[in-house]
Length: 382
Image (cartoon, rainbow, N blue to C red; front, side, top):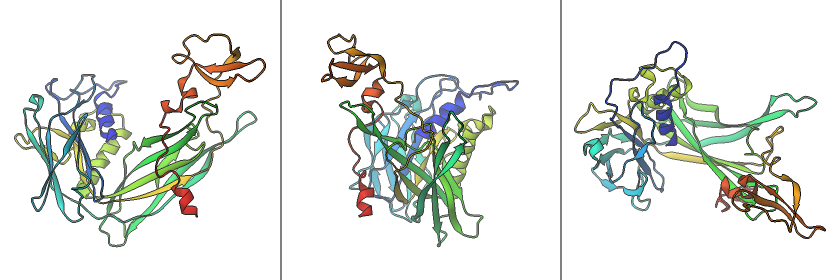
């Protein structure tokens, strides 16, 4: 969901250089457009819809969450489920009362209670929840990306790939997203030393197999891990979700993908020209951004316990030298400087401190609460 907002920001405020003249559509500069981001699946889980108001064209400000709306999901049997407002523009389903069913069609209904949107109501087109096959294989490979010399070690990268197929050819258009988590252990003995960092995918991952003789995906690149990060310093895990989408949604994501790959400033690169599947009931000419996705979901997780040569060392510059005798006061301790080495039992006793908080407290980057799935790889090996 973050990706749609980033694309909107990127396209609207794209820098201009050379002889290209920046083109701005003839729109009311006070106009704010509704942005809808949401995914409905067949899993027993909470489904989330986020509603925001887009930036006015040419104005630099934060995207604003749309509050106080009435949001519902309607199926093709006229069953209706109301979503609960969670805050910050998020509206969620009750995982105990709602679960999507393959073969059924669903549409999203939104009633705004905002004068900015004229208290208009909005609907998505009916979307069929298509079945999706399992992920056949999720695997990784290391490879050399840069030769070393006398002063520098060679650098390696790691690519994560996916295989999938559908013998029934019910799924011709695939989409994926992922969540990656890695363990972080600080090289110093500090209270918050071990943490886990989680990152959501920020790429559009799609594949069209409709023109192939079979609905098959082989060695599709999901994620590249660079040695410029510490993701593979300890242990790493990634869970990939696979969705089956229709041709119209594939075309939507394909256009959004191309929007991020090109840096032109023509009108057809502004996201207002990328039609979604949501419209305003009272005024069908009003532009609505985003897409309401509906799909079955299958997932697969792997763990990686390896390291990369040439990996960045993030903590080499942490210590401030020289060491300080323990009895000397340290100004702004705990606010601007933090202790990372405490040798109070040495003779004489001394401490080493840092002016970089991430060197002394791993919770600046992640959480010190271990994810519930973190030891699953150990269980699977038994």
